[in-house]
Image 1 (cartoon, rainbow, N blue to C red):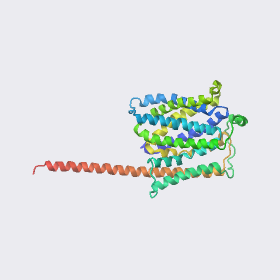
Image 2: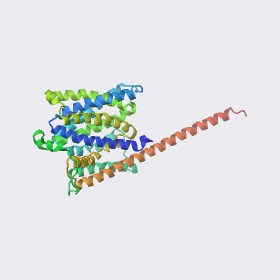
Image 3: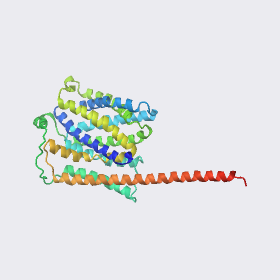
Image 4: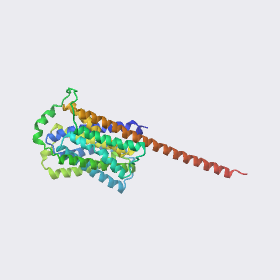
Length: 362
């Protein structure tokens, strides 16, 4: 019951809280002068170290058979979902802002929905209420994210937060000299990041069914991703000082991104994809904008605008619409499955009765 009820929902909300925090800590690490490629490399290293013990303790004895198809899918997943997605995202984050990065990541549900339909993992039933709800919900989530990002409107008078991150003030004083905003390169790489991440969702939906071991598959992906990301980072940065983690924000950001946002988050997403499908997982992404807006107001004292409130409302409505459509579809599938099982049992009973009457002497 938990896998079909509130547990997947709670896990995906937790994942989005984790990613919203990563957007802020990673941006602060980059503002401190950390190369985003090095940040990605450390993220994979810490993710691998954190997930391997769980893979061994929880899945080693019950590990499914590893086939060539699974090996190819793990390699492809590491290239797309780990290396490709994260390198593109952090490079985009360097040349843009956390808000823009969060907003453009919300193209993920649209990309995932289109790809899921193309690979027949989701169905578009225009005449079905559940299909209409999923389509409208996806459009509302994307529309709300775009509205929240590009329309501000009047300032909402919530006052100033009593909590404030003093380190942010220090970084604001040096950000102009350490980073450059590129209105083309930053958004473009983040859009590409969302596209390759959507492909990872599609691969996971297929791989997780044949290889239901989320800790082990994540460990393999992170290990391969570590090698790939270290090789890429070394091509652009050879200085030992650039790889130093003496700075507290660099160390914190690397560990947080690796342990929470890769090691734990990828396991939770893989587990949920098996039970709910790739669209269900991706549609929670717009929550990042709402969480980031609140956290930015609380810690960085950024202002909240009318567009933020309206966009957040559309995102919540869209999310509810998709969840309602998916729930209705799953109930329909469960009812069909129950009917089929009942029919099979009735047929078996009739066959047994027929055999009995055939053996009764007349």
